[in-house]
Image (cartoon, rainbow, N blue to C red; front, side, top):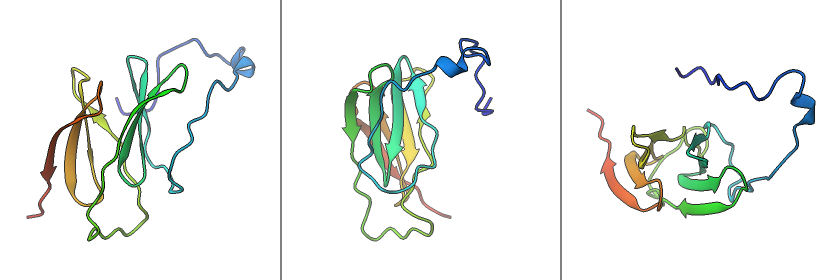
Length: 123
């Protein structure tokens, strides 16, 4: 419901003090993150600036794949090279996102291979 709320109950006020860091993802970008990662079937999907998608094992932190998108050098950004995040399809096989150069892409969530890439036009 886009509330960033989870109905899960494993973490409570009584046991939150027992949480421990399990792994850390080191991004290859020094840009800020402005997107919430998606977790589907134990895989965490996130973006790193400017438009790379990363699939990570949510338990171990192992990177499954990275899809690197090279935006057009003509792309003009006003507020940093950030990405607003990913979306998944109902069957969780395709992830799509908008790029800083006005493209909408979809990639296979299992392989990280591109499925389609379309230019978004104003008008």
